[in-house]
Amino acid sequence: MHHLVIGTGPAGVVAAETLRKLDPDSTITLLGNEPEAPYSRMAIPYYLINNIRSEGTHLRKDSEHFASLRIDLRQGCVERIDTASQRAILQDASEIPYDRLLLATGSTPTRPPIEGMDLPGVHSCWTLEDARAIIAGAQQGSRVVLMGAGFIGCIILEALARRGVDLTVVEMENRMVPRMMNEHTGGLIKTWCEQQGVRVLTSTRVNGITRAGAEDGLVGMTQRIVAGQARTDDGALRVALNSHDDIIADLVICATGVKPNVRCAAGLDTDHGILVNEYLESSATHVYAAGDCCQGRDFSTGQYSVQAIQPTAAEHARVAATNMVAARSHKHRGCLNMNVLDTMGLISASMGAWEGVEGGDTALVRDDARFKYLELQFADDVLVGANSLGFTQHVGVLRGLIQTQTPLGAWKDTLMRDPTRIMEAYLACAQPAVARSPA
Image (cartoon, rainbow, N blue to C red; front, side):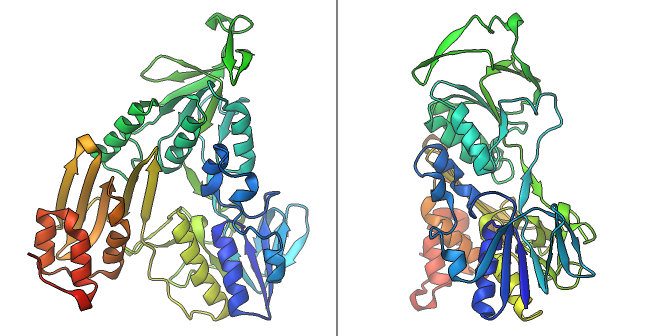
């Protein structure tokens, strides 16, 4: 049996390792399209602030890890999949046959269709190559514009601030992290960042980027001290905004979102991502999908959607690999959409149906002065979602109660009055040995 895994992110790596564990005698090929060892994009911010070297981003630290598992790690870019003959055709015209195929091709950064996005000095922050370019350009004192204050943008934000740059964040929505925070909590994160010296412009759009010219009084005229060295403004960029004055920047970083990488999935059924069934099988026989490219079941809604988060990638990988070895032996019941974010020391989290459900109840406690907020969402007496800021001790408990769909009984009324008693409710309802009634 030859298992071919395309993609060397967390989904691909976990799948290859699971395949080896479940199918010791098989041939396993792990194919990636970057000239790097498999690495975690979530580790890139630590590389940006020099906490780790590039090797520290690697998913597996032992250089012989894949060889020791008899996993053939290769580099190559897939042009298309021929599902009839069960072959992957690469851009160099070489072919890799397979008996079972897993597409774990991840996501691709999106860029808004505005003038100047292809200029030198404008970068995404998605690959190690991107990170190296940013490190070269984001020296202490450099003027940096970060487009996007979503999950990825906020991770990059802290790394840039710690590099000592003059940072402006531009976000189209009316709050930061709009896909995981409501208007109030997103606004609190903005206030927190501004107190740390970061300029944040919400409800603001970049209209275009151009080279700053002589008319700006810059080129060949102005020198500044950046990282202890004199720098002229010859490479400066003018960033035009819809509702604020233009910004002169040395570097522009685009973090406006990602989209599933389904380019090589031509011929398969796709929507936002690759469509799969409850076994993570695609519309083609013996072809599976996992991770950011996969439109899998959402635990909370029962619907199929793309969850571009690492825990989902790992869970998809294990389920898909199990079914590649033993067809339709393991159903995927759905992944919990959960995000935990550290923004300059302020921890925020959202999980499940955090915006609430029809006919449900909401419990809320907040202390804006201390940047604390906890909101619980219920369907009857079951916790179905949560949104929090500054309550780090509750994240695991909230996830456990949501995923186990534990009936809370009388504890639901207690939590409606005081959501911070969630740990007591968990111990009483999810741990029968210590169960007790609320006081």
